[in-house]
Every structure is written in structure tokens, then in C-alpha cells.
Image (cartoon, rainbow, N blue to C red):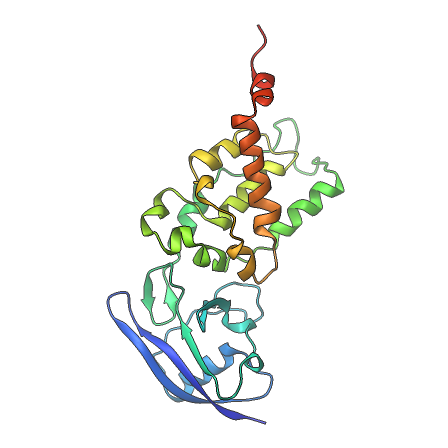
Length: 248
């Protein structure tokens, strides 16, 4: 059975905008993105929204629904009551291009700043060998679809625009942690770079990034906290510092 839902959708650009009220039909089994598409087809043909796969795998349709960062295509209308007003707004951390579409180029800039995987020079492709436990550890982080919801909800950049220069955010600190754990990566200074170049110290492990991850990656527990521990060991543990001293 269908019903009429009340939607409140943000319309505008980075300079000016406001919430607009709509009443739109909802059918059984639909997600928020279905309703946004129906809204485009029937009432607001100029409404801008970014999407691609509609299967929770491309990360394109990130937005905020009733104030919570979510994927439009993975948020079922059945999670709301028929009387509830569903408010859809763009991700708050990034500049708005138009309506629900934001400029996420900050994330691609930070991605370019992370040094790539550096394999041993004496190994050719196809000769890499790893323990299964190391494979499994990396696989969790490789599930990331780069929806940037974790980046959006991280208060370090969400509430402090000036931190963007010095803080790469949970998605890319997780990437650094993944590479730092990789047994075949020969780039031996990743933890220190995380501290000095990517702002690891800004993270206060509130786990807000983990809470909004649609792939249920334990970003804080399995990536950021272990990375912080390795940085502390290498930078402040006197035994580790002594161990690193060159022999005379």
C-alpha cells in the first residue's frame, strides 16, 4: 500500500538556499532515493542529486537524512513513520554545488597525498606472498566505497574548516593504517607521516566515523587506534627509541 509522505529537501547552492516542502507518493519497499527520483519526475525536475549504482556500492548518493549522514539508496522508507517529515540535506562538511550535490574534491586531494603501496624491489608481480591473517586484516579496509560519510561526520573537519589543511580524515588515515600493516610495503615511515603530515593527533577516537560507515568497517577500533598506538610506540617509548638507535 502506498501513502503520501512529507519531504523537506534542501534547495540552493553554496551562496544561498533553503528547505522546500513537498508531498510525494511512496510505495512499499522503496528507499529514499526512489522518492527523490519521483520528486524529480513529478514536481522538481531541476533538483540536483548525485547517484550511480543504487545498490550501496558506488558511494555517490551520500547525503544527510534527518540530520544523519546516510546513503539515499540504502535508507528504506519503512524506517520512518507515515506521519514523519523526512528531511534531506547535502553533506554539511563539503561545499554545496547545487541542491544535494556537494564538492568532495577535498577527499581526492587528500588521497593524492598518501604515498602509494611500495612493494619490495626484488619481487615481481605474481610473486607476492602474505599470511592469510594479513590478507584478512586488509580486506576489511578494502570494503570502503568512498562515500565519504565518515569524512562528513568527523567533527574535526565538520566543525573546523581550517583543520582541512592539516587533517586527512578517517578515510585516508585508515588507508595509511592499512598500508602500514601491510607486510610487503617497504615505505617504512607511514606512521610518522600520519602524525606529522596527515593530522592523526587531531583524531580523538569518538567513533562517529565507524557509526555512519555503510560497510560496517570498524575504522576506529581496527585502523585508527592501532595506528595511534604504533605512533606512540615509535615516537615516545624509550625502549623503542633505544632499539632504533644505530649501532656504533
